[in-house]
Length: 226
Length: 110
Image 1 (tube, rainbow over the protein chains, first blue to last red):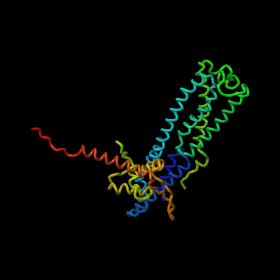
Image 2: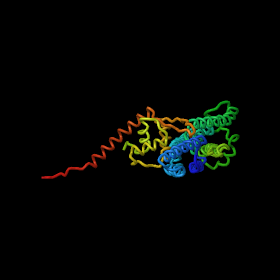
Image 3: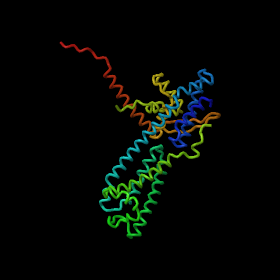
């Protein structure tokens, strides 16, 4: 490949940056490189000399920024649809189930791990393309966190009460488990406190994973263009 | 309007007869439309990826001697069904527009 095609690929790589996975970036660069080489060959077959053929190929492909805009735009629309769908369903969960279950006198922290997966998925979809393997990995990671949180919440409940599930609010072990947060938000009404505690847990872990998901790996930082 | 006047229908159209790589698809669209449909060739790839994700086309990397490998696209059964849908929508669209744009005979009263 000539220097204009190389420049084009470097530009595409720079503009796409961390907005896609390393595999997808590699696939995109490979495909663009192959297209530009074919276009250059086509232009040379029509009588253009090497340098002009390469310029014609690059020109017919459109500017790197336009290309990247189209590529990322098409992914965003799929990602945005999923994010919107998840955000709406998650919102309904928060609005309906948290107050409902709280009024049934279930310790609301038990609900937090269940809501975590949805919230985690929302943050993950924001910057990642919708790949089945990635969704599965996300689900697995979400499930693992659920298990850990469930253990943290369930074990003291089982120790204190010998059972889990619906228990009387007066028996709920707020003091030992979320005493710090409870005292910080004690001025709020009871249902709002429950929601705030669950929201805090979800938000913290959500942010953590959103940050982790956006961190470039060492391998990804290396240029893919030879 | 049911017909999607976007690149995806054009891509399915040119792939119905043979498997082609990206550059050839762009070239074929230009040739078949007699240069009426011009677009930045880079715009083709989001359309190709969307079609691949929806299962309307399948892609395969084909190695070439002494040259970069090419990703060759071919239409799937689902793609053929989608193309048929697009074709019938397009025919309806053309008929609809034609009946509006057709020269009307002057109506004389009395």
